[in-house]
Length: 152
Image (cartoon, rainbow, N blue to C red):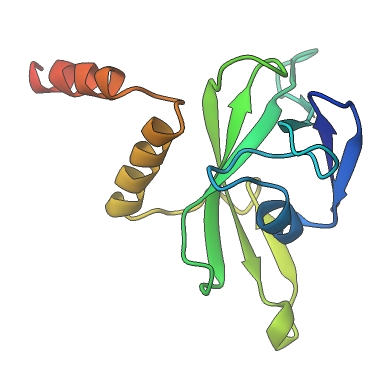
């Protein structure tokens, strides 16, 4: 499956051959998708028919955070999702891929029928830290939520 990244600045489209190419070659050090022509922010438009009649989910994928060491076969990650091309990140879409091409297997992307990735709790905390680091959450938001949980 190929991926088409559209540039927010120059309007050009860049292609990634597969999920490995997308994550390895089309992100900056923080995980945001970048245009291969001008290095400005890029995004991927998706559209999915929902089970509810006439309902469609049209997310904008603006970046991705990898959640495993590069050497591992199982590569969980999250897409950074917004409802509009230039709006704030409003969600994280849990996904994974397994690349077994070196051993004669295939590349598999999973976020559908195969189920979501399974993360250990320390990885969940690492993800939370990364979301704070890149500005998708603030420490105050996390602290308020934790304080609410403590008071229950």
